[in-house]
Length: 161
Image: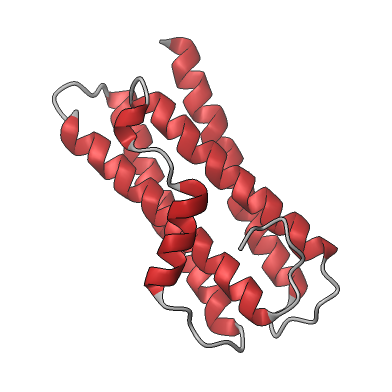
């Protein structure tokens, strides 16, 4: 399922929110991977960036889970969602980039783009959801804004180095 499609039901919305959860898990896992693999080489600024990325991803997952709980849907099996994320967003590995910051930038940009597309799809949809549309959009826009801040933070660190 692509975010580019119109969202016509709670089930589609729930699946897209679950994709967001898996994307956040990927960001957290990659931050942890970098932290563990480079722990002797990390400077304080990069260490703080990785810690913040992991904490923010966990918070985003909780917020997305809360939205899903408010929908009138049955959960999609995790394996199915994970396969969708892998096919669409998981084409790279942490070691595919020339450093921690490039991987972090890719993760932040991917998440930002996903939430931007999801917001657009919700706004373009005429569907009646079992969740308050204004609350849904407000939550997604807050998360997107935090991802945009992350892109700027990583870019600034890269520029300063």
